[in-house]
Every structure is written in C-alpha cells, then in structure tokens.
Length: 622
Image (cartoon, rainbow, N blue to C red):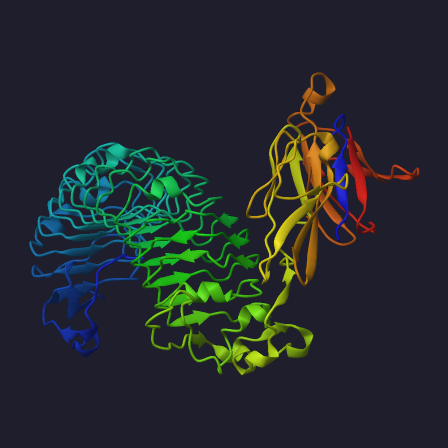
C-alpha cells in the first residue's frame, strides 16, 4: 500500500469519404495522353471516381514536387485533374485557369498560399468539384471566399493556420458535400458558417482547440451524415450541442477530454449508427449511458486511460448493435454481469488488452447472437466465472429457455493461443480453451480487481466524495465499507452523511476534515471475502487572511509508489527559495520532522524512503 498525505491548510499544503467499388483492382493503369505537356510534368489518362463512385477516365496533368513558383504552361485545354502538390506557389494565374473548362479536380496542397483569394479570386471554374488547399498558410477566410466555385462538392482546408472564418465564408457553396477544416487553430465554432451548406454530408472539424460547442451549432446541416470532432479538447457537451442533425449516422469524439458519456446530447441524434468515443478520460460507463440508441450498429470505447468499469445496464436496448469494441483500456477491470441488456444482434465483442479478470457467464447468456469474443491480453481468472469458456463446453443456452431451447451455439475465441489463465496459480499460463470445466470450481471467492480503487483520493472540505468498489464472484458478493473510525457501512442507511449505493459506491456528502483517512471496501459471499483500501485526503476550504492569500496556489500528489511520492505545486510569487517539510502523522507518538530547501523556480519534488501504509503531513513554507 502507498503512503498517504495531508497538506496543512495554513500553508501551501467512421463513415467518411467516397466509397470506391471493389472492382478497382481490375481497372487499367494510367494510359498515355498524347498532348503538349508542360515541362517536367506528366500527362496521362488516369482513373477517377466521382463522389457517387462513378468511374471516369480523367485527363490528368501531374506537376507535383517540382518546386514551381508559378503555374506551368501550356496546360492542355481538356485537363480534368491538375496536380500541383508540394510546390512553392503563393498565387495562381487566373488567365491560365480560365482556359480549362473541364477542370474538375485541382490540388494545390502543400504550397505557400496565405490568402484564399490568391486561389479563387477571378478564377471562375464552373466545372470544379474538388479543391485541395490543405497544408498551406491560410490564416483567415473572408466572406464569399469560394463564390467563384458554384459547383464545388469537396473542399480541403485542413492543416492550415486558420484562426478565424467569417460568418459568410462559404456563401455560394450550395453544392458542397464534404468540408475538411480539421487541424487548424479555430477556437470557436460559429453556427453561421454552415447556413450556406444545405447539402453538406461530411464535416471534418477535429484537431482544432475548441473546448465548448455551441448549442444547436450544427442545426442547419440537415443533410449531414458524418461529423468528426476528434482531438479538440472537448471536456463536456451541452445537451443541445447536436440538436438538428436529423440525418447524422457517424460521429467521432476521438481523443478529447470527455470525463463522461454525453448521454443527453446523444439522445438528440436518434439515427446514429457509428459512434467513436475512443481515447477520452471517461472513468465509468454508467447505467443508461447508451440506452435506446436503437439504430446504433458499432460503438468504440478503446484506449481510455481512466476507464475502470462498465456498470449494470450501461448498454441497454440497442437492437441494431452488431460490433462493440472495448479494448486497450489499461485500468478496465470490471464489467457487470448485466452490463449488456437487449443487444439481440451483437455478433462481435472485442475486450482484449484490458485488465479484466473475467467475463461472467450471465454476460455471455445475455447475448444470443454473439459469434466471437476477444479476451486475450487480460489477467484472466480461470474459475467459476469462466466455466463457459473451455472447448468441452460447446454451447451456451439462455437460462430462461425452459421450453424449446435454442440450438447449441459456439462462441469463437479470437486468438485462443494468446488467451491465457493468470489465476489460480495451478492454471497459470494455460490456454483458456484447454482448461476443462472440471478444473474450474463451481463457486469462487470474491475478488476486487487490484487496480480498481486508486491508492489516494483528494477532496475539498465541504465537497462530495465518491468511492467506487466492485467485485465478481459466485455466489454474487455483497459489498461493505469500513470508515477511518472503524464504522462498518452496509446497505442500511446511516444517520451520518455516509450512503452506500446498491452498486457498491460509497457516497459522502459535505466532507469534513475529520473524514480523512483510510477507507476499506469489503466484498463478501458465503465462501469468504476480499478487501481493498483507499486513502482519502481532505483539503481545507480557503479562509480569509493568510489562507486566502494562498488561494491561487495548490500542492497536490502527482504520483504515489510504495516508497515514494511526487508532489507538485504552483506559485505566482517569485521567491528566492522555499522549504518543504514532512512528518509521519501518529497520534500515539511524536515523530521527527524532515525538511529540505527548494530552489527558486522548482515546482515539484520527489519524496523518497517513505514508509508504506503511513500518513504524512507535508507543508511548503513560503
């Protein structure tokens, strides 16, 4: 167990892109195009697909990577596709483009354009469908930036330096289907941008430092089918942020800072089929988080550093869901036996590379259409909870099938050679499929997953404390908590501010300084019990005078190990040096105080040679 710390209160203590037919492999390679070609460029007839996946043979002029500072000449009149990627262009000669009535696809990405008018001004290109302006130096889009391109269907503005977009920047683009403005420097989303885009189907907006989306910000995009909002720094979502997206089918929140599933916002897009919540900071998938998303087909909950638990009925009534991915979550150690309810069409369940000890048989029985499950790279307990897994158990029957039982079905284990037992010791290293059901006990002791509870939790005085504890066993265990004062808390309500919720969560309202200390969770069934403990530190409220002066400063525990702790703090004062002191807290004996000098500008310190299972008081002397 790690040391614990108290700080003195008087000191500083997806569906994106065009669909290319499968027959593309049988299409001819580029053909010669016998025309007068610009010097050093290549002129050929190349395959090209329209946005509705219709194949064309496109006369193409390829002038990529030639360090051109101006448009080459002569460009053949029949040119369909003009490639000018990776050159030194900063403006285009409009007179040369006017002579290209068939120009459909123009790529000037990776050049030096800093003003969009350098590309579009005086360049009336009625046939242009696709314009690539990504990876240039654009910083602003003025009103009517693309009004000379009335038939444009796809516009790439990603990976520029866009900081601002005028409200009417996209005026005149009534035919636009796909807009890529991802990976710029936009800090806000203006709903007025989208009023001129009635037919837009795909919007790539991710990679911009936008922390808050406006309510009904996309409400004019009635045709939008795919929205990518990855890598934006979103911490939460307003309830009406997605309202009005009547046609939305695919939505990505990849790599944001969401701490919970935006359930209320998702309920405003009932037609959603594909949802990506990968790489967020969600800790719990709670009851009802994805309830009644009746058209959802695929859901991704991967690569989440903070995710520890999938709660009861977290995914319920999702009749179209066929694929569920919950992988590479290093702290995910608990899935409630009834986490997945009414998922009648779920075929593929990916749970590999987590910290799961088991997948309960009741979970398997609740998924009548399941064909494959991935559990490799988990610390699996091969005991009573895993009796469904051995090869000699060839089928799963639903427990409620009293009459006309379903036909036997085998659930395929993905990578069975890598799906190994970690416990009990006598089965460690054995392949799960090779362990007989006779080697697995019919009942088993409760186990609280080792990484489920943190070692240390900070809470401010007067705030709310939530401590989550879960366990799996057969018979199902009951959960109790023991407070620092030794009081055992069960399901029966207490007169104090403690409340134990049915799922095993301990809730403490209006925390006081006296409630700091060691809390122990006990999971118990008829066979025995398991325990895990967590240390709670309570920070005093800011007071007047000296305490208020330190309100802008905070010291916290960044990392705790068995014999060390890394502390960090912030200070706006330019002090030449400070002192850090620490002392074991022991009511029965006086303990020595240790002190060290902290050099000016230092804002972290590694305390070493600490004693495990010990409280420390740490003070930063200003």
